[in-house]
Length: 359
Image 1: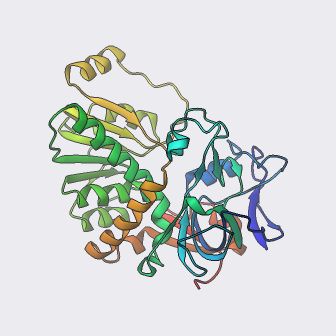
Image 2 (image 1 turned 30 degrees about the horizontal axis):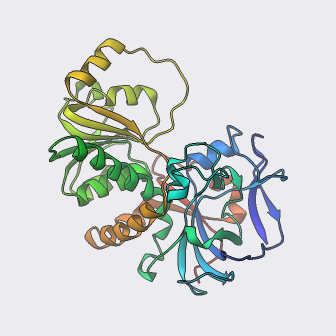
Image 3 (image 1 turned 90 degrees about the vertical axis):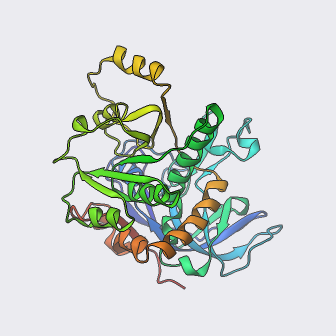
């Protein structure tokens, strides 16, 4: 079978590799992979910034965003049948089985020794067939066959939103009305829809023009689109109950801290480059204290958020027809490897690789 692989920590080692199909064992599931999504994590691994091969290997199969059909079930697996449309989660428990991992919260792993498909010590799903633990798989309805590849990106938002409400509602009476999303990539657009589904007034900020695809998608949900080039963040008021920061820009992240009002919360979902930024630390911490404000970061998602994501994709598809389909702006083939992992143009939002024609 063909697989998309890299040599971790070696820049520009992206290639197609011929491999033997994996054998399914007890408790596992053999996946007939249909599609994989491409995100910034994949591009960073290709650039050699991080990534780790499975123990004893010298390459890593990419692909942590995926949509598959069940090809074969290992012994002991219940609740699935061959042909089911499924999405596997990404992270697996640490070998120490820490408090969180043993309670099905591998996304909150204490040791940092977790493994992640397509990222860290586990092969990903960018291959014609793949293996995963069946207990880490969620089933999708056939109605999501065209957009189910967005399940994993949406889980990042689901977790951020749930954690936001858990913290806020456990510390005070809280009825948020206004939310701000910084960034209009795939996750930013999905965050916009989730916050709109929850009944919030939402503004989404990006740098594209008001007639761009991203702006039109934001407006389709009833949210306000703000062009940061025309309305800099410094000119915006601290009027938001919730801010989702998704750009990965340290300077934008610093600005985000000044946009929440009293009792507000900022959820950081980006990965930030290590660089120096000037900031009045005294003012920052004083504002946090006097305003009872919260800042927190969130990464990865456990199976609970995947299940929630499937439900919300169905709701989004019904409420805003065509929205999810428009997020997928490019569909590449495995043979288009080099081009697929390079951003195409400013209008590109989400690129997926179709491993095979949907079955």
